[in-house]
Length: 110
Length: 110
DNA sequence: TATAATACCTAGAGTTACTATGTATGTCAA
DNA sequence: TTGACATACATAGTAACTCTAGGTATTATA
Image (cartoon, rainbow over all chains, first blue to last red; front, side, top):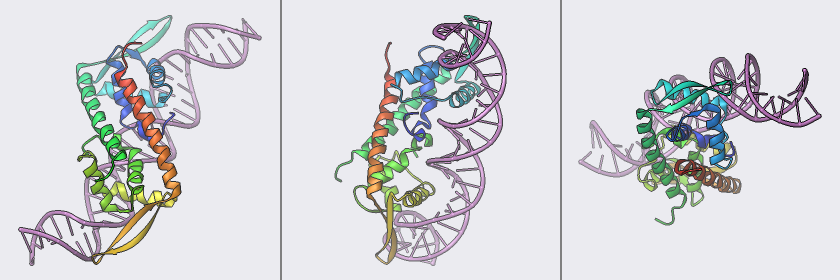
């Protein structure tokens, strides 16, 4: 992680769900895509991602299926309706939170 | 907290330091000011704030002094040069992190 | 005078991300 | 063909952080 890991807290789930909202991804692909799209700011570890995926699946936010690709079995994850709804809410919360931080940081005068 | 506590992680220190970069505050005042300036998005608990203040003081980022105000002793905290430098760095990291999140969230096409 | 607000503090629980480690397969260069 | 690296999934244990819950005490207000 290029930034302090503390910042990641709470956002990881949202970022994963957001990618899965586009299309199905397998775990390793999620990590690579996050890194690419964030210009190397995010470098999520496998020890972080897989527990998140399992938790999201347990909660019915995503579902998974195996697929054979060039002789290798990959486990793909796809978002559910419930997951899409939760994602929308998390995005709202993120905007509210980041807006509040910026408001405190840039506060001038009374 | 109006937003999920996960989001707060890592930002609390920065927010506290940022307020102390303006003037000296006492603990209770920091909580009230954060709440006010964030339009109630932040409602930091005392069990969160005081450990942060003690940690920051241990690390030499802030220093404290008692002051008698209307018959009541308040403990004020002031930022140090070291604290100001760390704050500047944390703000940079925040911008990088929040920018990366927004980049992932608003990504369109390849 | 009772209640709320102010003001400080700590212990313990829960959540989350990380490091470290294990397993196994595919690809590519020497 | 063999060794190194990337790919791919997974778990256990650690560290960091915030919260809840509790304690103590003073001041303001109804």
